[in-house]
Length: 132
Image 1 (cartoon, helix red, strand yellow):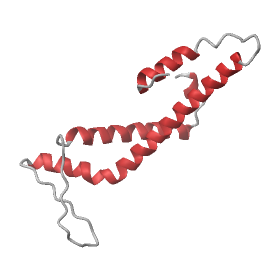
Image 2 (image 1 turned 90 degrees about the vertical axis):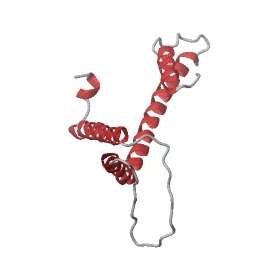
Image 3 (image 1 turned 60 degrees about the vertical axis):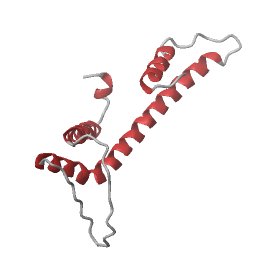
Image 4 (image 1 turned 135 degrees about the horizontal axis):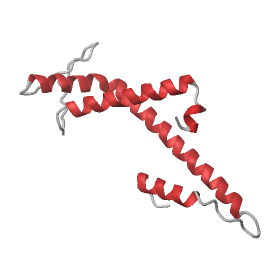
């Protein structure tokens, strides 16, 4: 158990596990669905409900594609919320690094920039594809 895990409440740990399980389920549905590109056709039928027709040569592929489509309404907002959460975490890490870097450099005779800041920025740039 890491020190950050020890500081988390049971609810936070449960939410992390639930999010990880949900992401795994979404990934499994995406992996099971047929490769794209897909096309959508609207026949102009006015109705109170929405019917989806999936046409495939293979029954199992159709069923898996339907599962993917049927879950999309909940999966996409969940994924967008997760993305926003991770983007906020990255912003917070950058702000934390900026604060400590600024704290070192603000003096007339600057202090050394904390040694963890350049590798942190390199990791963020490498994994997010951004130049610092």
